[in-house]
Image (cartoon, rainbow, N blue to C red; front, side, top):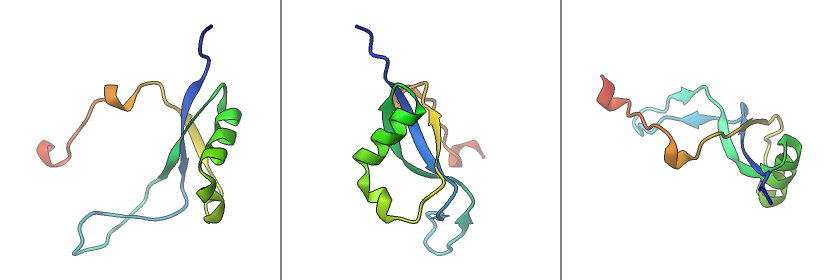
Length: 85
């Protein structure tokens, strides 16, 4: 039987990220990666995400986007900012 589970990443525009430069805290305008989950569709994956990450219920995150992950992180292309300039 074929596994029809798909992998989704869950992101939120809420929250704040800072750069890694400890001398200067520059606020970065981006999305927070909340986690990953599997499901036959987005709704099932979101339910599984909440079930597997109950800590999220104790945060102020509310608006969450999900995107299907088509390729494994292992298979992804890696770029380095410092080596390109």
